[in-house]
Image (cartoon, rainbow, N blue to C red; front, side, top):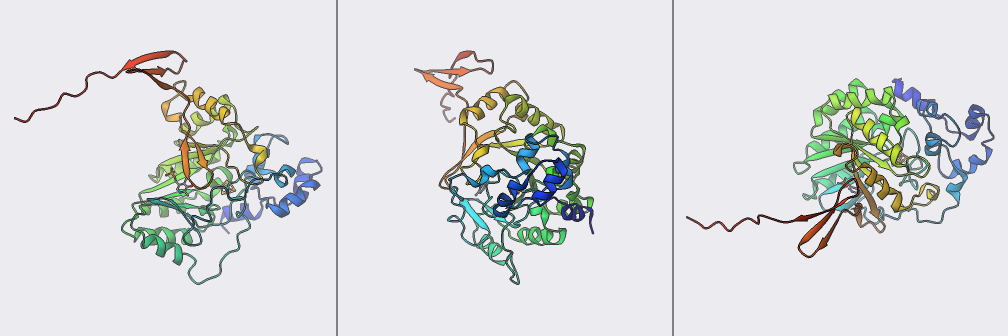
Length: 353
Ligand SMILES: *Cc1c(COP(=O)(O)O)cnc(C)c1O
Ligand code: SF4
């Protein structure tokens, strides 16, 4: 058995194992786990230093998950699904949910309603319908493999998907969204990377939420992907008592660049049922963005976005740094000073001859 498969088999999945390991009574977690499964890889669990810390909060169930009255699918992913497994919200790109499994079930997951509980569809060609839709929709030029975690598929399955997408002329690029560099870095094998590099242009977006997740193993996994020529991005979720702090988020973004991962998005928590205890005010996100802008590398500053309820797409939120007075622009510098800026040198009309 491959190392990563063995580690996955050793993952912690029951309340008893948490009780045993941390010497606390975790019995009240059993009903939560029955509703929303738990899975924690041995490596990720080792990052927990104390109950309630930022790693604990991300992976250990919380009774609060059962008392939250939001909708289970506020982004209308199911309504926007033309065939099972595809979410087609924007004109030129689709999300394809190719796996229902993850190495660690994040307690704040926006697809909490399905991850870990998807019934696998036993049909001859599970990829047939989504592939047919993509092939018959020439507007789709960007396919985002998601889940669950696409890298929980084995290399052969994943290669079949990539090869079949590569055969569709209008698909110009593929992205893979995976948290395995964080939760199961052993999955990023040399063999996997040799396979992936045959399917460029391929992008990988990963998901680090806290500086403590940037371990030597995670760095090595990212280096392997980057060495295979894959540009790496990161999508963090803003989480109460995990990373809702300008200093923590700034350090995370800087450390990501040090392992060759470019911060791409910070997501405002979706209004998904069972995740209420992670929600932060929008003002907190804006404060973090203000702390990043200009105070550290521009490359360390991602877009802060809200995925609009009702499936209306991602909307970037920007701290107020521009306003208008007559023909003057008032610009706010990163130190908080307001400066005036006037448009000058309008291009003159060029006369022929
Ligand atoms: C986030 C998302 C995408 C990708 O959006 P980008 O801004 O291009 O990264 C595509 N489809 C759906 C349904 C999404 O939620
Ligand atoms: S890895 Fe992603 S899809 Fe899987 S549980 Fe975590 S947030 Fe959800």
